[in-house]
Amino acid sequence: MGREDFLELHTRGWANGDASAIMRALADDYVFDNPRVGNITKPQFEAYFREFRKMVEAHRTGSASDKFMTFEDLVTADDGTTLTAWVWWRIPGTPLQGAGLAKITDAGVVLHRSAFYTVPQW
Image (tube, rainbow, N blue to C red):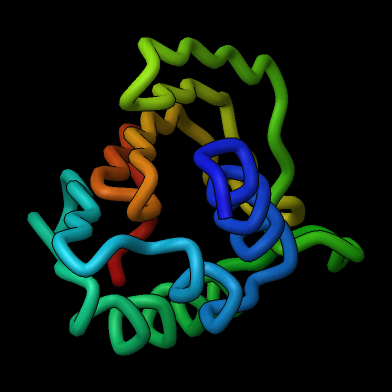
């Protein structure tokens, strides 16, 4: 699988709320840098994602969408060894939205940073 394939799988996993798809896109040394909870490693990710989904459902005020998360303004750059992707994300039916940055190598997604507006307690 190439860098673009890993990015597509990672994005599709988040869009569908599918932790198993996201996990398949992650490199072994993956780190998710979340400003609320700090760094989450690949072995910690599924537990984090379960809690994140619970928080989203508890704070959903609008109608549910066919997508867990939506994306716009995707920008990518590939230097030949690392694909960098920036995106604006939203979670339909919630006030949750922010920016994401991902670094993808031939081994998969190695870094995912998230920044977002203040969110409800969870």
